[in-house]
Length: 186
Image (tube, rainbow, N blue to C red):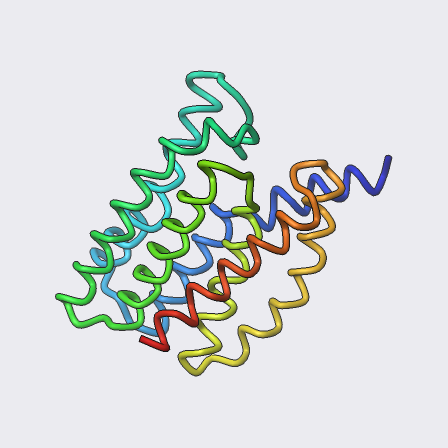
């Protein structure tokens, strides 16, 4: 019982919105973004992708915040996809290539998750965690690897709360890593 409670806490804390906010803070520091650019980044990287599941669960009361039902996830991906693409174009245009790169990687990862979700449930939690670890490590911030310690913990939590199978957790992890690698290979 205690381990299930701990798993729920881990799932809530190491989740897409929390990770996305941390990404915005880190990018704001390393790119020395102005307050107005931080606001744009926050709106496109955190609010736009997270608002649909929040409305789905809290306003429409159709399910939980994690959108556990695979078939309900599909339309909720669209605002995030559009926001990541808009952010990638905007920040590239403004000359902030590290931000633009993360937004492009986020778009690729989200698009893969979107396609997979038509047929199978995959762990968005795991992709959301492994993506920034991979991306920031690849662009020269090996300190990001310390967060790799959270990967098995989050994987355990997602299986423990019966949100995913071990294979769905592994697949989500791989998507986050491969999306980052794909951008650097091309």
